[in-house]
Image (tube, each protein chain N blue to C red):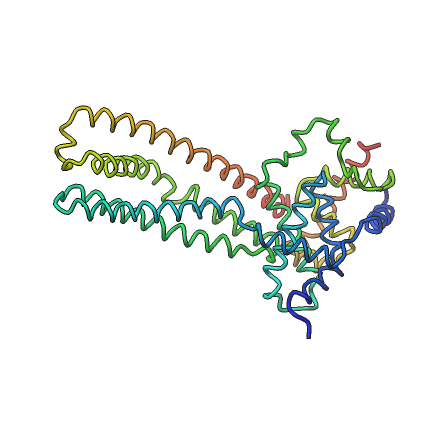
Length: 164
Length: 205
C-alpha cells in the first residue's frame, strides 16, 4: 500500500503541468518561478490530507496554485508590479531560458501584462475548463465567469495587438 | 489571434514545458518543508522568545526586590501585559500556520482582507500608540531601577537617573514607533493589493 507521501508525489507528478503554467503567467524570471513552484508544492502537501474528493484533484491544484501565486505577488518585495518596470526589462527577461517560438512568446507576454485576476481567468479559459469549474476555482458565479472571460479576452487581444 | 489560435498556441506552450521527475519533486517538497518558517512566522517566534525572556527577567528581579512594592507593581503590570502579548502571538502564529490555500480565490481574498483589516483598521488598531510608550517606560524603569541597587522612589528622586531615563525613553520610543510604522505600512500595502484584487474579481460593472 502506498504511503500518503507516495500518493501525493504521484498525483503531483501527473498534474505538475498546472503548476508550471500558473508559474509561467505570474512570474517573469526563473528564480521567482522556482521559489513559487516550491511554495505551491508545500501548500498542496499541507492541504492534501484534507482533500476529500479525489475526483476534483485538478480543481484543487488550480486553486492552491493560483492562490499561492497571488499571495506571493504581494508578499515578495522583489517582485515589482509590471507598471513600474521599464519596457526594456519587460521585453528582455521574460522566460529567457525557455525555448518557446515567437507566437508562444507573444501570447505569454500578452498574458503577463494582464492584471492578476485576468491572468487566472485567461489561464482557466485556455485550459478549456468549464464555467462550472472556473466558478468553483475562483468562487464567483457562473454568470460572472462569462463576463470575466469576455473582458479578459478583450484585454488580452488588446495586449496582443500592442505586441506586434 | 482568434480563440482557436490562442488555444492552439497554449497547447504548444504546454508541450514545451519541462516536467520534473518524481525524485526532483520529492526533493523540492523536502527542502521546502525544512525552510518553511516564513518571515511573518519568524517575527512571531522572535516575539515569543523575547516575551519569555522578559518574563523571566521580571520574575527574577521581583524576587530580588521583595521589599520594594512600587518596583514589584511595575514588574507585575509589565508581566501581565507581556503575558497577554505572548498569548496573542501564540494564537496569531497558529492562525497563520493554518492558512488554507485550497479555498476558492474569492473566499481566500475575503478571509485575508478580514484578517488584515482587523489588525490594521479594527477597533484596537491604534492601541499601539498608547501601549508602546507605556511599555517602553515600564521596561526602562524595571531595568534601570534594578541595576541602580536602590529603592524605586530613591531612584526617581535622583536627577541623573531621570536624565538617563528620559534619553533612553526617547530612543526606545523612536525605535519602536519606527519599526511598527514600517510593519504597518507593509501590511497596509498588502491589504490594498488584496482589496484591489477582490474588486477586480467581483466587480461586474
